[in-house]
Amino acid sequence: MSLEKRTVVITGASGALGSTLARDAAAAGANLALLERSEEKLAALVESLGLALAAERVLAHRVDLSDPIAAEAAAQAVAERFGRVDALLHLVGGWTGGKPLLQTEPAELDNMLNQHARTSFNALRAFTPHLQRNGWGRILMVSTPLAARPGAKNSAYVAGKAAQEALMLTLAHELKGTGVTANLLLVAAIDAQREKLSAPAPANANWSTPEELSAAVMFLLSDAAATVNGARLPMNGSPA
Image (cartoon, rainbow, N blue to C red):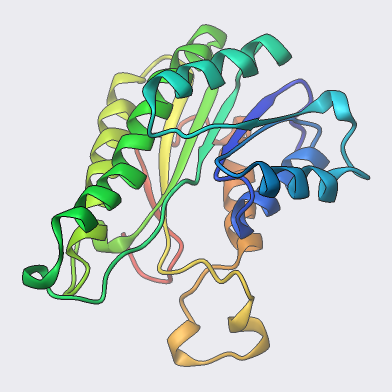
């Protein structure tokens, strides 16, 4: 597939999935806007892409997406650099868990809501209008099956992910007929070390490698996926 003349925004870009998506999108011809909180991680990512991506096709922008003003400024910077925004791949997030709810501190809940819900809210508000102006766009985020079916000792994390999903699925309804879609990939764990390939075991059988997730994302970025909207796509070997 080709992403020629498309601009793809990747938040949390320096992670295992973000860097894989950056390489695949660049290979497909896209302009890249790489968003990250760490200047050092951004520089390392851009350097790793250097041989495959001309400087005029990449924007590295340091931003804290928990700040709505900073998110708006980032979206404006991308639009000014490339003239358009076509896709938002929002990968910011983290995990806090392993303790029962009664032992979970309020700060842990705040942290998870901030990382998953607030950054998503700010990114969606900042970038979606640019996609709507094109009459074509793709918004993708990574979630977890636990958001719909919580288990024990994950209360703060699941609350953050459930809120993120609610934002995305609501937006998907609001985007009907605009040419812009919003979808979620459900992942048990991102297998950054490719352990299920190097050391397969029952515990990692349903993990998703960055390459597997990138292949799904690349399809969802294509014109062939125009009617896929508001989906929770299971990438963990189980139904959604």
